[in-house]
Length: 116
Length: 112
Image (cartoon, rainbow over all chains, first blue to last red; front, side, top):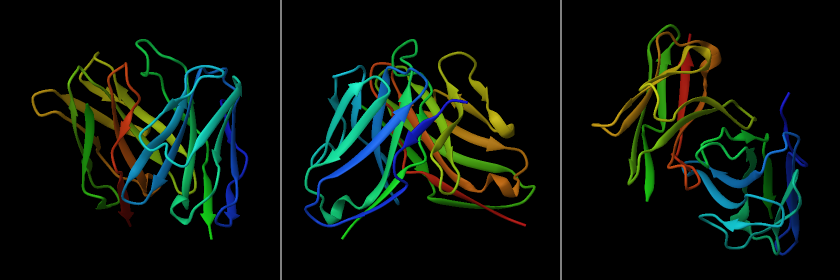
């Protein structure tokens, strides 16, 4: 069964802390994505990656960075967490599809981050 | 540029009633359209997708959606709601050369 695994379901951090959210997929997908989900705002794309060592900014990259050192792993980093980054974070992966970006997205179960 | 509008943040139906969730899109190129569902405390999973083949698309759990270019719509329907259909539903648009843009979601509430 295909799987996207996010390392933590629930995290509580303090303002100014550095936060790492880890995501691992076992489907050998080239594409990986980090979304933020907030009530009434839907899903907003933070960063994505089409290949190892590659990253692209999404719609709301400010305050975030990412790392993709291995194909199966995509990490989201909050360098200095702030209260407005309290949210649900969803990782997803997909194969490229033909044409690109038409492949099904497979999502993890989400990481709910609270910043105090 | 592309965008998605989902009409109604919440839709309530009775068990056995027709489900209709509305989605309108905007895209400057031929779109690819998707419906995803999110059950409580889970990630999203694909219900169905339109990629320029048949305009009526059938998905899992008896859901279907019809692509209407003239109306720029991709509404999701199910003939008879089940309690297990209670979830949040997201419409998304892509163009093949851009990442998906998701709507804000519609919460489906099913009452006995």
